[in-house]
Image (cartoon, rainbow, N blue to C red; front, side, top):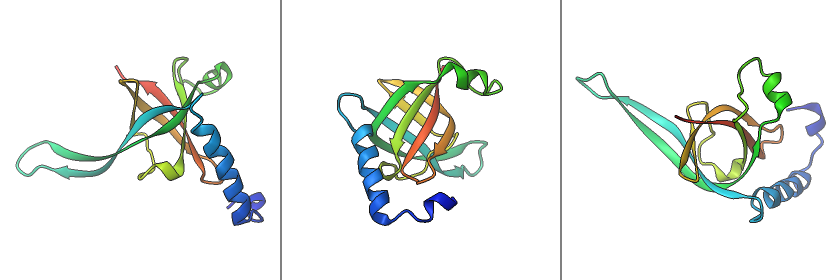
Length: 131
């Protein structure tokens, strides 16, 4: 835990969570998306295939474009059409990974970088449209 968070009370965290929840679920800015994360990979006996089980959550998210500065300083990791997708940690049944996919308005996006904020309140997902 970061030193500055050590003194944060449960009441203080709850207050921050309520504020973030209000922003990320505001019907004027939030969109409904699906987050699918692989949870189990099982090798199919006698074949070269695998069965993958996914946990899919439908939740509210706020989408924004990735900044030009962040693209330029990413060392080629990010692209101009990548999105920043913010979702509440409490709304996810499984933490997102780089194997997770997002469905936004019928389009599929791959998670390029999942980042949990220091208070474990929300995820900042960098997502790229899948071909």
